[in-house]
Length: 426
Image (cartoon, rainbow, N blue to C red; front, side, top):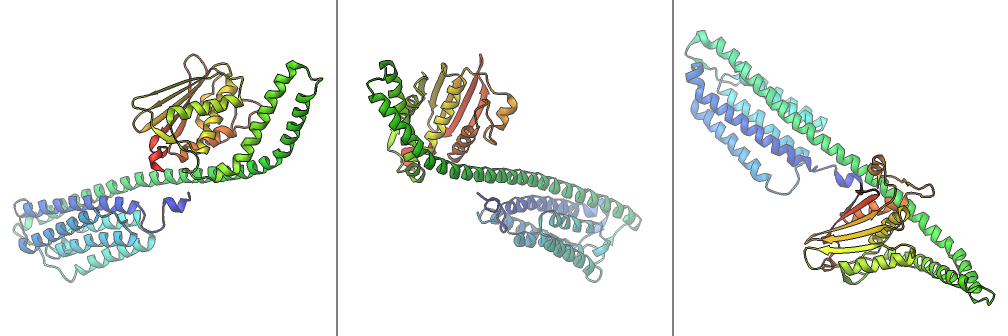
């Protein structure tokens, strides 16, 4: 997944969020202006032409309703559309001020919030266009406006000062509220971008590991064949002690298992989910997977417990998922081969696996790095298994959590949504 897939250049998903904020801010402004118009004569002793002013307020509210209806559509809001929506406010404000004193009206400060919003969320070109529109609209008021009729001339200056304070307070609150919400949204986008970059980096490392694994599998074929021949000759040699034949037979089985894994790499890596196996009950699938693991680690005696709140659902055991679980099983066996417990629990839509060992445990600092980078608690370990397992589980919508086990050891908890595994999803 690339960053451009997360945030496309046009029609950003944040456009709808910005327009929704604008919808609420515009609604608050309309309510505030309506109250001022209603109280103008009694509170400020001003005669206002109610018919055109109320008509403009109703029109403004109707445009806001159309904006609300537009947000019901799933199509994304482009920068151009957001600019057009922002332009409605200075145009409607200009029409209102033209009937209520023009540039002498203290509400002229309300030209500033749309400009601030445009500067915060739109490209520079659109922000400058918004600023030019507001300046032009304010300038036109000097030529096209109706002066206010004040009943009490002595209160005119007091009225103007109060109006300036009210519009300053309203503008400050609107700008602070919008910019604060936008800052939160931008920080959230930055976090998503960082996660996308981390995922892209992890995918690159996985691809590199895949190439290395393919090369290593090809090179391992020859030494494995040589070991198989030598083990076969020793087993058939009459001079070989009988007690050694048992070990040789085990060695031949392990070599055959290794050759089978290498032979099936290409087939299993290229198979689709539908081809990777038939439907099988989740408890039976886990039993077969643990049995396969025991054939590779015969010295381990794990305890398997399967429980569920419903009948075991049928799933398709995908090859890469099985390989990821086997890797986690091996980690537990490497930590404490004599005490490994596997607990499987499912609900209607969720699958949980717990892998418990009695090893030395993992430090908290290392647990936080799990799945993000290579690390191993064993000197001879490379730390690749947990990294790949984490990536595989993420691909299925799941996750891995490493927790300290009560009494000592590590509890590896795997959470998976069943919808990605159910047989009827194929």
